[in-house]
Amino acid sequence: MSAGVAIPEGKRLNKYGDLENIELTVEDWMTRWEKKHIGFHKGEIHEFADQGHTVVGVEASKMAIKEFFAEQNLSHTQESVPGMPGSEVFKSSDGRISLFNCNVFDFSSAIAGKFDGIWDRGSLVAINPPDRKHYVKLMTTLMAKECHYLLDTFTYDQDRCAGPPFSIPKLTIEDLYGQSCNIQLIESSDALTDRQRLWGLDSFIEQIYQITLKTDTDPSALTH
Image 1 (cartoon, rainbow, N blue to C red):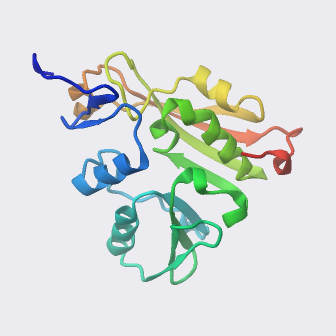
Image 2 (image 1 turned 120 degrees about the horizontal axis):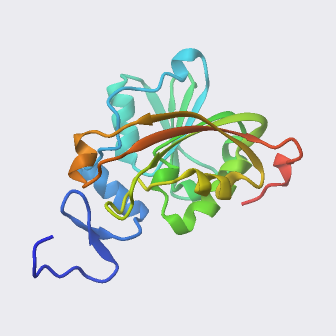
C-alpha cells in the first residue's frame, strides 16, 4: 500500500488492489465474478456428474451458474424455488445437475433433502470467520447418516495475507466439526505457486479431510 493512501474503516485493499469489505458480503462475491477476480475458480471440472451422481450446488452468483452451463454446453431450465423468495434453481435437461442461485445460509435440507456425499472446495475457506459455526451447523444438517463429506482447506501464515481463502488449521477444523463428526486428514500437499508468492507467502499447504457423522449423532436432531 502506498504511503498516504487512506483506507476507510471496515474496508481493506484486496489482492487485486480494490477496496472491499473486511468481511465479504454476497454482493462482494458477485462483484468479483463481474470483474473476473476469480482466482479461486479452476479451469478443469470435478467429474461427479460424469460418474453417475446427481449433483446439487449452491452459488450466489447467477453469472457463475450461467457461465457453467454455457461452458459445458448443457441445456437447462430455470425456475423459482418454493419457500426461498428471490432464489432460482437451474437444472440440466437430464435432471442430474441442479444449481441453486441463492445465499448458502438460505439453503436447507427442506429444499433439496440430505446428501450421501458433499464436496466442499472453496466454500468454508471463503466464509467470514464469524459465520463459520453457522455454516458448519448448516452443512451437518445436510449430511445423510452415511454421508462422506470431503473438505478442502488451506493453511498458511495469515499474518502475511488476510484471505480469503482463509487459513484453516486442523485445530480449527476439530473445533468446528469435532462435536458431531469424525475427522480424518486424508491428503496434505504443497500448493504454493507464484500466485501465493505474490501475496507474500512462502508456504501454502492444501489439506483434504474426510468428515463423517459420529454413530451417536442423530442427523434429524441437527438444526441450523
